[in-house]
Image 1 (cartoon, helix red, strand yellow):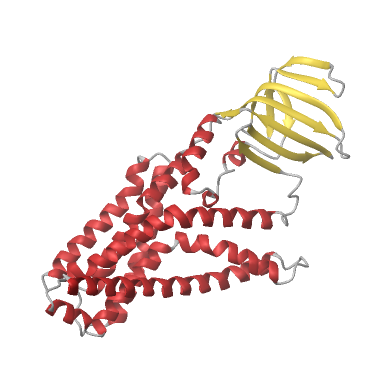
Image 2 (cartoon, rainbow, N blue to C red; image 1 turned 45 degrees about the vertical axis):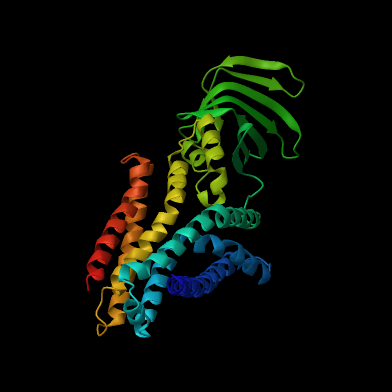
Amino acid sequence: MIRSFIINNYLAREFFKVIINMSLAFFCLGFIINLFEEINFFKDLDVGINLPIILSALFVPSMIYNMFPFVILLSGIWFFLKIRKTDEIIAMKVSGMSNFSVIMVPCIVSMVLGVFFIALINPITSVLVKKYESIRGSYESQQFEYLATINTNGIWIKEKNFGKNYIIRASNLDNQNLIDLTIYEFDYKHNFVKRIDAKSADISSLNWKLKDAKIIDKDGKIVSENINNLPYQSRYDIKKIKSLYSNLDTVSFWNLENEIKLLENRGYSTRAMKTKLQRSLAFPFFLLSMVLLSGVFTLGKRSKENNLAYVFIAIITSVLIFYFNDFSAALGKTEKLPIEVSVWMPIVIIFIFGAAGLIHANQK
């Protein structure tokens, strides 16, 4: 029992060291690539090098989180090849351990890391991405002229058209219509000009059609009312409004349920958000399947076979897995498959393949 505990502790510690090294390698590579992208973005602005470095430091942790299953796969391959090369696995088998027993410890470590990443790392990366978008967005052209957001008070839009400023508020979205719409108009000096109230607005195009509209001047007097198909030219249509949550990395795992309820109350589709929730719940099992897959590519091979060939095959396989995973998630978002099936199906397939491969390897 003591010997088994010592071996398992050694395996866990060494596997964790490999994960740390692999994560640092991915971080450095991602930091350098993103730094060049940020430098290119700010090339026409006099901001110095410090701002691109800060933005890269804010963005890369989220990238590492999204790529962590790939990190686990390569870490598993590196770890298992290492203990084979040093003949440590032979000593473990002499002590009575099988291939299955050897891989159990990395599997447990990956599951624990998966829960840790979802519960603690993801909230941190979501805050960092929000900060990244806030800083980077402040340098976007026309940042203060066009803005749209969703909160508990409704849907808010700020835009500038024809030299005038507009602030628009709607209670919710119903198909392609904004409901209970209010448009506040200001002149170029930000002086209040008038207000338009409407029961709904068709926003299928940039040329909105306001239903049952009422125009009120700056003194609070009704100029006209019961106007149908009152035109309003906007910078936003239904596609742009629905893309407000295009970057789901800004939403923490712990806030997903509240965000889903908020979007449902505002009439938005929540399939993308629900897909993210299911992928978060499946994250530890995805990491587990990656460890099993790495074991198939290493523990089942003969000692004289070319390690580089197996690593190359594993990398190609991992790329195919990520494409398959994203394709399956896309089917869920477009309602071709139930969300749960689209998220869990790739993981189940990888798990079955890995488990079957390990059973075969364990017989060697």
